[in-house]
Length: 234
Image (tube, rainbow, N blue to C red):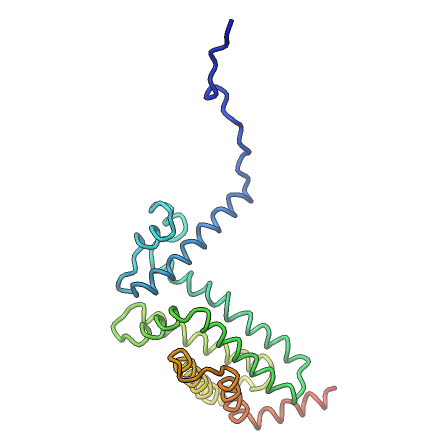
């Protein structure tokens, strides 16, 4: 007697989804949403930014968006955290690690490498950088306000790095000096980076050297004291 069975009656067994696989899949979807958010922001700016457009660009169903983010504000917060973790934190950790064995003669090369790393970030994300800088200057933009707050947090984190390495004592008297330095350093870097993106300058090494001159001049007295203390300690 011929068997009339079909393949549907004997479905192929599939391995059960393990917690690790589910977490990996969820992380991949989250990354797709974050990358899609960047693309939508670059192409349409914040006024054209929406959950629907991000989900469509990511190639996922709209309900899946809510499995990761409650709304677009939460997505933007996660995007900011992700960019800081990807670009800012590694640079700061490199500085903290290098300073432990730093000699005074190495200060300039270290600072120049630091600024070159920052220029590399701008170079790899030019469209995003332009969008962020433009949106930040919009006084009535909710997203612009969030970006302004974020930049203040970044400045504060770099100021804390200077305190952590022992260059600047952590005291109320130094708060204004740190603020003046950070505002100046960021303004100068953004000026040079903007002109570089516009084609006025094509030598990142020269720009990094000019920024290094600013840092070394601003903190010249503190740097001398810092390395004298290190020498005495060793």
